Length: 215
Image (cartoon, rainbow, N blue to C red; front, side, top):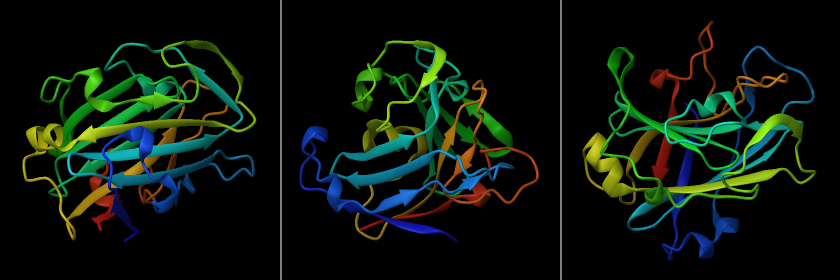
């Protein structure tokens, strides 16, 4: 099983997080697509007393973003995703497009979805993007030469309200996966950090999640 460690940062301010100290992950498993021109996606994580913080760095050929409302199907845009579970069964899937629009569902066994876990509020997640946040890209355009970044954080109080349990401490283990997708782009790509060992395309497979260990 693939494993990574998330380190604790001394500051809860996302603008002051020491990202250079975070372990870097890569999304390298691409569903039925082995072309050389696959996106380059790096992920960094840190946690503080009250939040887990994530930073995606993406380089791809084209970007597109049509969706602006919470819980819109952002997986059809240029999108990054973080799925995670405390008990290995029930999980939250957090999906966010390149301009900062997100979707978050609570997912139970047999794909039972709660589409509004603990009353979602956009301000809870401290979203930052290098592309203009909230400005649609209705038609696919060339990705900036240096790519783009998507940063966000998820409060532990929100996670615990949705999944139960206590905030993580050193040694806590979660199950998780990281994804890259763009379902409506002409250059469709579906990638994961932990490999999906299933014949059909389905990110909702917690049995293929890797391990996230809090350091």
